[in-house]
Length: 391
Image 1 (cartoon, helix red, strand yellow):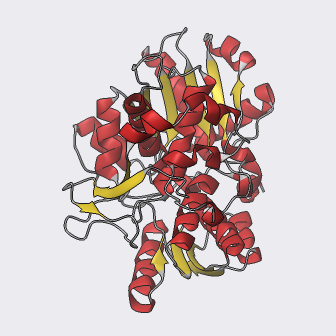
Image 2 (cartoon, one colour):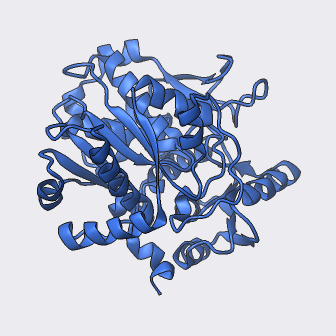
């Protein structure tokens, strides 16, 4: 029995459609990411929103809106349904009344990457893929290694040699072959792509296959459910490759099409980057639709050290459509906010997650957020994976 209402894949650039029962990467015509399109008319008639809420917790309770057709291909390690925590002490400190953090550090392998790679590896298994390859700034590699191990799929990873030690070791522990690169994730991506083309590895690079996005979008479903099928006013999200930001915006559109939202007012999306690597911020400030490659990228937040996302036009379009903003913060502000989150709320956030608090403080100064608005910070991973930077 089919578990999913997946209909087809569609190019986000030129609109060409592709069959979802075949292996695809990105659009060969215009080199844009492919998006999973569901038969939401049928889903609206057949799927009970409240029944999903009653199911066993985990990402796959949303299976009708995920790309895996047969249950035996779902690779599950406990991902999804991460806590949405109020931040009462920070609220008081900052003069806010509805501040929350979506804490993704409780996912398998300690980061939100488990969602996307769980979906991508599951679909790869269903399509008969036997070996996968990825370039990573850290957490995506560890997540891919874990899910590939559980699926019985061979894994190969390229990552910068200064990637946090925890990411290197967790990947190797799960049986992946890890190659350390003298350079950035963009250099690792070039090597991974070359090996994929030469040896037939399936490339799971961000947005260069359709299904990581589908796992990440479930964060948007969970937020809507948590707020009784309304959406918060502001989402502050750390942006490297941008899968989560684009995924949540896609989720909100799907929920609206299904008629599951109590109202259709969507959040303003805030893209947070580091001052040492801020291609989205630079493009946003110019009103551009694409990003330039960021030269000499550097930041303590390794997940934000992405000189150019493959889906830059989607990220920027979602920010514009939401009447959002892109903002850069310093490494000093990131580390200060990381300490503040831990001291005031007991949350040891990854530097990328702490960047959202640093950004919020700037937005308060600018008057961009209002005290009564429901504001969501995204902590994308555990600070325990970045202890290299604390020594």
